[in-house]
Length: 527
Image (cartoon, rainbow, N blue to C red; front, side, top):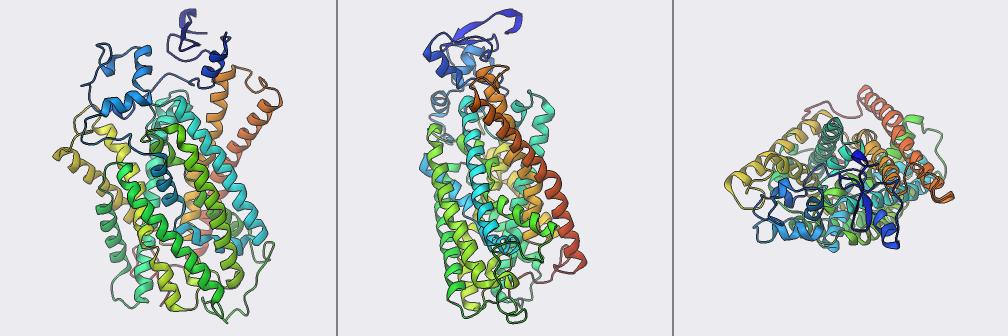
């Protein structure tokens, strides 16, 4: 029931005095049922991006920051947000679904694809392919849940706003989500500093005479410069270029692996390449979990979706971009992983898989096409982090929507701090596959599964009331149980996945598999 027992009808559905649909009130018309499908789980806890651009625009004489529930609901509609930022030098709701698809392709069609042959070599070909399709389906399902949540709550700007709403508007939930959000993005930036240094060392075959730390610093500086554009619409133009080059890179590596006479990585030291349809006898529990985490990391990227949707002109078109990317992912990841694995075997597999090529020219050529994504994907996550911090620091000021010295200086400084932190992380954890697994277990548990299982349950509670789990019969039962399973999968990632990742890192240091922190030792695939 509403506060003090009063209910009103707004936009064809019963609401409380907070402007939130009352799930216990019975709809009286077909339009009421349609409205209830988009019921909020709670009152707004934040303003949309446009609401932070200053109060120069008003509705019915009421300032943006002082509106009642009825007027604030109007202020956060998509059309109203676009109206509020009209005329500003910097506008945010400018992305078409095609541009959003370009951002998604650049996020998912990335260097991590080249860890799939390693994962298949550890899990076996058949389990590897099954896990690929399984994780893709889960991510598609949870991504549609993210989209539904953003459509019900169009004022959310990022996953941190969602985190607070999911856990009953508790401020600790916002701070916890913000901490994990920034750490996740910075780890991804660090991965690309690490990979950039690996690329330069590979091209120089370990004979450059320059410390690997210096190469990581160079990549961080270049990435900082490329991070400076303020909107996703601008970055989307670079994203298309990045995704295209990455596709060419992985296709070349796959073709080269097939046409070579034998694999690289020390051939014939371990005999002829051996391919297993099921897990090889040498696969331990820790190795298997890490391989699964590597597959999961490549697919799971829901953390950025609310930020992308918040800058779309027509958020209802988001599923078009999502389906296009998911279909492409399954095809590309499966082909690249299985073909390279079949030709290099379990005994000559490296992560990334470029190191499995024996022909130095083939290796360098295919790896070189990866340069745009080595830079751009880190840039994308740096931009998401900087956007989050900038919007909070300059809310309600002209620096949000105008080209001011203070605004641009602060934007550049925030980006600079994130890239310095990324550089430090890259030097402290100087390895590829284990870093992917650690990131997957720590962050994908929440942003890939737990959050969206909770979101589904809370949205169905808002729509169907306290007995939402049985309101539609078997459909409600299945939906509720499935999302509880998603939450349990997330807990598995967080506990067992983190344990396996840390154990693998410890084993790597004990066996001197990789260099120490801030090492000058070459981390290239050659030399």
